[in-house]
Figure 1 (cartoon, rainbow, N blue to C red):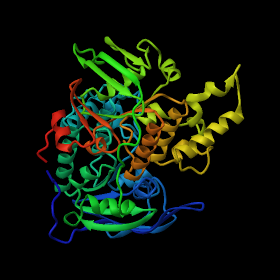
Figure 2: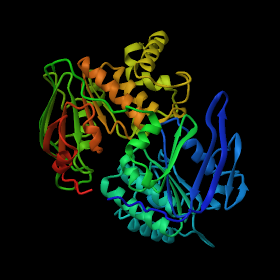
Figure 3: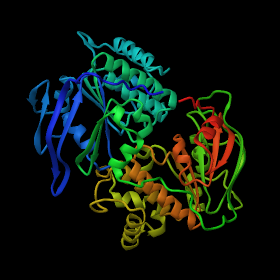
Figure 4: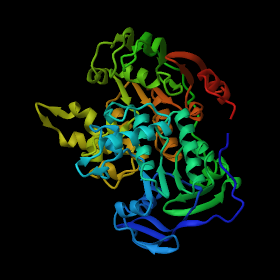
Amino acid sequence: MNTAININVEPEVVLAARNIAKSYGNTHALKGVNFDIYRGSVTTLFGENGAGKSTLMKILSGVISPTSGKIILDGQPINFASPSESRDLGISIIHQELSLAPNLSVRDNIFMGREIMTATGVNFSEEERQTRELMKELEEDIDPLTPVEDLRLGQQQIVEIARALSVNARILIMDEPTSALSASEVEVLFKIIRDLTSRGVSIVYISHHLEEALQITDHAVVLRDGTMTAYAERQDIDLEWIVRHMVGEGFDLGSPPAGYDFGKTSLSIKSLCIPDQSGNDFNVVDELSLDVREGEVVCLYGLMGSGRTELMECIAGRLKPSCGTIVLHEHDISKLTIAQRIDAGLVLVPEDRQRDGLVQTMSVGKNLSLASISAFTSKLLTSTKAEQSLIDRMIKDVTVKTASDTAEIGSLSGGNQQKVVIGKMLATNPKVILLDEPSRGIDIGAKAEVFKLLAERARAGLSVIYSTSEVGECLSIAHRIIVLSKGRIAGEFNSSASKEAIMAASGESVAH
């Protein structure tokens, strides 16, 4: 259902950015961008990683200052000296990468830095009451005292959203707010967005989920290489319009790699059961069996709670099964450690690249070589030449766009960070690669590059298994689509299947 509304009167501009430029040395992140935010409307900002979206939003929220240009708020020029000054003026931002303190509770994360004080100290009971109200508004049954590190990724995203909502912002910037949310959680968020806009709150919405973003858009802006390439109102845009202005004509996510026969079975899962990790008496994966062959690309599709992530993590050795076996090239690896499975040729690219896939204090190169360090280490001595050779080869093979291999990993775009995680695992020369939501938080161009890379490796004999909650991604490079529902295989399709059939098998409504 399309929840966007048509605006029949000239919308009021509450904040205007004029000729905003931002340079880092010889790198021009923004090149004279004009951008308007309208009162009570959703302005969606589209663009590939590196297009300048996050840079523009950091300027509007006071995180960084522009090299040139001006910001006009309520008709008056203004310079934000800090994020707190921007926040005091009613501008709040939900960043793409979560900025939560995992060891603190949900309550403490929401009120961190702006605690509710009384004469005797922090009013924890009032903070807890307000946190419960926020969780109720977001339709999430999360205890305010739960440590954030105990929450799944989607719930952590909800906490990040709750923190932004708690400041009663006039302008709310949402940078990839749904990247880890289930379909039902997205529906709740969109309902909240429409409630906020009905009260005059202005929303800036950034998302790589293009079809999803179309549901909430009032105004659309496209950035490309630091320049605004297109603007239109909702009634004048569709998916083709967005993609064309983002990446050009004739774009697609690829097709299943062809021109070869599959090899022998590389991975065989038999009657696998995985118990619920919260201690409940049921299996999140129940008596599941699946064979994957050399050179085959298999997609696992399912809604939140289908067992996709648990299945991936169990195969990789992160979770223990209660029954069943996992066989890699005729060797039972069910009892091997994660490191032993990597050595045997099975690797996982995790869903949360920031927490589980990258070491933020390491450079691009050190992250790429981390999983292969034993290959060039002997008697506590590291062959620098061999390590550098591997780093150079992987940067080229997975097309990482970086100033140098010594650059900080945080300096890369989301898509290039994901390539580093994938490159790190491919550097171990695996026989089977598992990828849990490999396109989470990356743009459509980077997504196509990742899928192209995986298709090329499949042609060379690598078995590829990736999970997704986007039905369109099922029909890109997968030879076979396995639909999961409540821990069981609910359907199996080839690449000629329809989106409707795949969604129906998962139990997802296809009415929209």
